[in-house]
Length: 527
Image 1 (cartoon, rainbow, N blue to C red):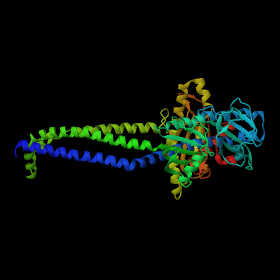
Image 2 (image 1 turned 90 degrees about the vertical axis):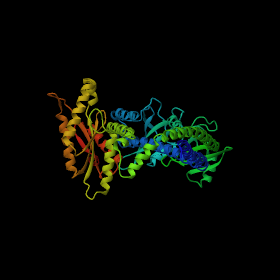
Image 3 (image 1 turned 180 degrees about the horizontal axis):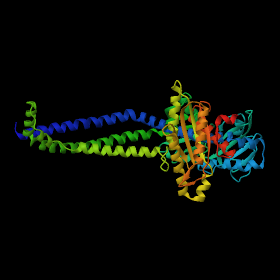
Image 4 (image 1 turned 60 degrees about the vertical axis):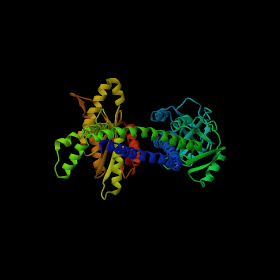
């Protein structure tokens, strides 16, 4: 067999080996797209609904967490029972501070049991809301988010979240409410939009709260009760995805209800979009396959030419290997260093990744864990607590530096940073590896202790933190630092992170109310 014959046959073999997979790939792409693109659209729409549902639930839970915290504050209860001027300013400030949590200027209001608003965080007139459904739901002792309504004060369309306030006999004596405007929901919906896909959110009465732009068929406030009836019938009155005619258009419709708010989430995908995608995918696949075939044939020709030249060398190497001999130097000639370069690059990427992970878990100023890391640690310990035969007690201590913001203003930020670092170092030295210590924000720290013997042990450690803070000095001069500490214990004050954090926050608030520079257990609040 001459060299030309070998080259021709090798070229044909390589070309055929390259052509068969690509021809099969083009056929498979078309077949798979026809069969599975609808399923992909269903999954995509359902995933979109889940994402929106989780966002709505998180938004509602955040509102209710803050509202329940306000409703449980002693000063709120005291002011509702006795509208004295001394508590009014502090109560109004507490309501106003909620805007810092949400980073907005939405209205927060306090209403008595007769429906009359006592305090508002805006300058608008106080109104009587006793006829409103959200007032009636709250007076029944339930948290509630309203449907879309017109504000009695501003006339704008709003949604209202309310949480009842109970007295010591667990009787409803008023409510705390927070308004939020539809543009917040609308802004999030726009992030979920895509070409030709409409996303709509409706309230319990099936009125549109928000929708993606670009579809003139649907407008804010529009009643979709008739459309919901047809969709629900097609889905046997449940959630899901169905293909149906909607407003004269063949569509893939996804419907789900947010269980927390009762709001409906509709995702509408025109079926024409799916067919366009199938057609485009087949055309692109055919063009790509043709171009690749040209390159494959060119590569096959070049490779066949190159392979035939060292054929005798390769044959000699194979013969040597078959006889048990090998030429190490010659084998090294065919060995490249690309894998070594790739390994080095991957190791560098791994080191960078580990460094980024560490930065994401640690507060840069103090070197303590950040809020996310502490929360994950606590949740992990609480899960272990459920399975452990003798778990002991778990304590969350919220530590707040007293009057730190004032000192930070008077002495300067650099001085404040030194105080924070020194206090963080003292906490680390105090507990070593026996606790998870973190910094939540500017002057707030958290200490999570597990496997504690009893409450007295926890009290002693809280007292030790107080004493440590008083003795902190910079250079040879004492700082004069004091701290207030709120302590919650599992399982006495709850078995979830949110419950424990809330209980510790209430205890911390009580310490501040009583003069600071001390600690209090959440159990003591009931004493």
